[in-house]
Length: 319
Image (cartoon, rainbow, N blue to C red):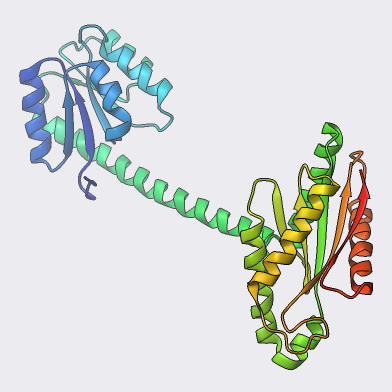
């Protein structure tokens, strides 16, 4: 049950049944949601699930007294929740000990109705501010996540953008170099895309790139596979732990993915469907490679594919 703006979720902990029931009734009459338990262990067990906004905690309880319960709550649960101690003792030493144990206030039993109401009003203000802060925090987290996506994603295709892919490639080169494990990069270019745009228009061209992007993203969704937009109608795929043999299979997978898309291209001299030329570079990094040189190798392989008639792949292997 969600609390209203004038109510709280209150965890009441008191081993004396009469005191507990009497106080529970008074709290509920004021509109609060109350979970009452008879021991510190019960309070700890129910704490996370109930998610209290205020804890009313008896000091004198068997097995685990209120001070011990308060210290446990403060250490185990990161969110600060007000704790008000309840006790028949009113010695200054007891109040000081309660504050040292993580308490925020101290009420002497039997609790005066007017005092209790006043304390609850003060705690309600805190609870309201905490709710507002939580909501604001969630909104900020959501905004930060959106900004992160915008910083790393291409706005048209929703693939990783060139900036992100460059950083990821540099990281992968360093890691594969340290581990002495091969990796691969596939660079692909949509065949005769200028002709496609000229005849179908740029809006249809964007739809074509979006369709290819979705297909590639769906086909290469495993861990350590990264698909990005290299620029214009060019795409890049980074493949971790991939030798030449595996890289060829991945290139074939790219070919089949685009073929499966079955996207018409009536103005291509290669096929009646959209196709792509691929450059595949498989290598064993030292960890010091310049990403521009890595791209250049894949670009050369892609150029060779175009020279060989397009709609194919060319592998350069340095493993």
